[in-house]
Length: 147
Image 1 (tube, one colour):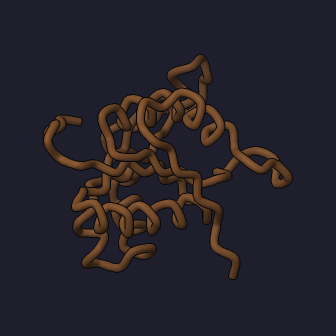
Image 2 (cartoon, rainbow, N blue to C red; image 1 turned 45 degrees about the vertical axis):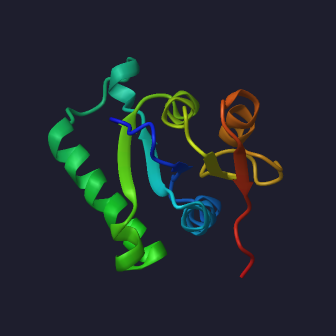
Image 3 (cartoon, rainbow, N blue to C red; image 1 turned 180 degrees about the vertical axis):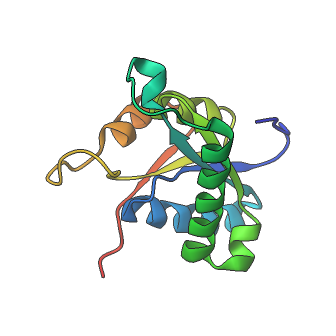
C-alpha cells in the first residue's frame, strides 16, 4: 500500500461481520468530516501456508474472486457511489499485524467490536482488543447496529 503522507486516511478493518459493516459506515462518515479517504482492509490467511495439506489452491483465481466479493460487499453495505470512493485492500497475513501496519500514520483505525470468530458473550473481539492496545493512531471500536 503506497501512501501519500499528506493525505488524511481512515483505515477500517472489514471481515463480513455486522460490526465490521457498522465500522465501515462509521469510517465513511468520519472521513467525510475530516476530508479524508477510507481504506477498507480485509485480511486473509491461507491454511496451506501453515502446514495444512488440503486440496491445491489456485492463488490468483482465489485472490481475484475474493477481491470481487469484497467489492460487492462494499457496494451492498455502502451503495455504489460511496463504495466507489473507498480504497479496498485484500492482504494476506495476521489480522492484527496487517491492520496495525495499515494504520500507521492514519487519522484513525476503525474496527468492529466483534468479528466473525470468538465468543458471542465477549465485549471485544481479540483483534479489536489487540489493535486498541498497540495502534499508533486513535482507534474507534464500533458495535453492530441493533436492528
